[in-house]
Image (cartoon, rainbow, N blue to C red; front, side, top):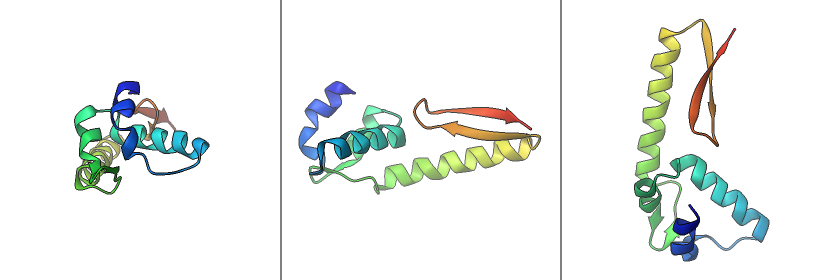
Length: 91
């Protein structure tokens, strides 16, 4: 990720230093640090978290989790944003 941020430093919106780190964390959480998805978020030289690629991934994840929850209704599911993994929580 360090390399990607160095290559796309100009795409980061103007913010205070502590806000920049929070913004980077949010971008990494939403994209899963996947370079092809990260690159689709750079629009006109700036990072845009409302691009269709992210919306599509979000819909697919929600759909997948709903299917799993219906199949496994005796478990509740929680997504860990930093590790991008889904873990069952037994009730």
